Image (cartoon, rainbow, N blue to C red; front, side, top):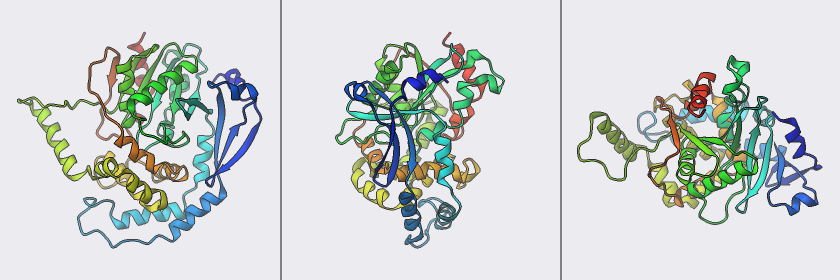
Length: 383
């Protein structure tokens, strides 16, 4: 990474800010930074002991419902499975491990369109590295990309070449994690895409690519449609290919997709209806109960790993709890519901170069393209 650039943005003295039970260590900007709306301030995160003690107390005092009457996961996470992961959360899980990992990467905040946007920014040591902005979805955060930062920024350590290198910019979506929470409607994919283009401009990138999955794919697609200066290409691992009006005659593989969507809407889309129609209601439940938060996200992890009933076969228990705990500590549940309420997605043509990856399951899919040869193939289409 460019240590000189780091020093340029970290000369201000630091102070600790304790708010809402969470300690955030931020740079205290000098008078010039306060007067500069484009200032970029270093950021680190440290959860307060009080916040972690409160979480443990709430977990210990959980009032459980009766067990499910259906088979498997058809009514949500089975009681025994959820009790098992919550017991691990309460007794064996260590948030400080995740926190230390998170704080190893350079993190910053900058004001864009009225919100302080948090982002990880790791510059490659290779001077010709191509910049890439990577957008997470739900139920994930910047932690989604934890396993790809090193291979992308330093491919030579993994047997690649300097030509495979990327600078990575990984923002927290508005209302998620350490980014500010909007107080009004309107922060949809289009608005977020414009903010990301401004962020890349502010960081000095004249040419870059964008990547996204889940909600991040909507943002990344919107960037391609808007065609901001400097955006060379996009990569999606959640392609939006369902047309508004279906053709009369479908090919066999198209018919299978339509049938799968129908099954999902009838049997797996209840959470989407709740957050789209009663976002504040969902927020009350998820902001007050860590078990509700865990159940909500654990269920999506099961769906995202193929609905096999065993998400731990694909994702480690601690990795899932890292995401769940970050959502809990930052009280990020309610806005995710509101973001769906205020958003629409346009399916339109774009001249921007696009690449798409598809895999048997979505939640862990991006890990597969972190290998140097995948990065090299993307890079080769741009040079």
